Length: 409
Image (tube, rainbow, N blue to C red):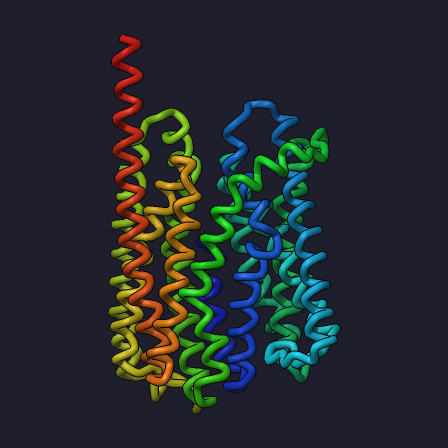
């Protein structure tokens, strides 16, 4: 939660110090890292959080963690090098790094730093160490803010200052999280079997995360081409707010990852679903509060935002639709993950992307509203499909468990 709240603090700081073009570029950076990490790492480090519960052997825990963490990092380096080479040889325009190879390498390091931080956070949660997890989250967020405050006055490019601060913050959080856990990892060995098991799980979640990125954040890259400069910065601002709010509310469910997975592993389906429902209701209340604040903000934004930034009141409706339906989809995600049916996430999310692309081509001419409604409508369809499938599979699994218990009795 500390990391999420720091993003809310960082947003006005960036608006106050960055020019409108710099803010658009930073939006592209945060969007790129959000998709590059799960895509290029194949989301192997996130599979640790699920495979951990399949064994009680502490040595195997260490092998699962180390094998998948370093395979994920190697994969990022390999694929990033290939992509940078293609951009250089093909002279492909790069609006983020502006075709500067050292900056592109720094962005790759930023992606690697995020993998380390996420893995450290997962390990802290698996050990049920709330103090350590809080330290990781807070240092990750506040380290970024502190680093940016220190670096930005001495650098001509505020975006590069923010990226370097991001790297510092993630590695700082990683060290805080991993050093106390060395005793748990020291007997771990690289194990190809652990990587293969992780791939079978992470492939579905990887497709899920990437597809979610397309629906939620691909509009930033599309907008950098189709929107006017003033529209682009406005869309970046509201889409950044939607994403920050999304990860903020979802952190409430993430904090219950262990009890959710424990209930599913113990075949206590009803109890797992109750945890998910309670979390979803809490998230809806948080969303209602923030959008109420958003209405008030729109009324007084001329006294708050610098020139070049604005949020139209009518943009809040598609944003609200997206946020609420995303809560439903998040609930379906935890249900399908707990039931080991992540393949359904892949099928539904790929289908959503297939709908998103032609719908975007039809609505993009409407500017910011077109981009927002495209995301909102696709998220609504995706959420309805995912929740319907997840609920059916949960009811089916409950019936199977009851049948087995009845036969044993």
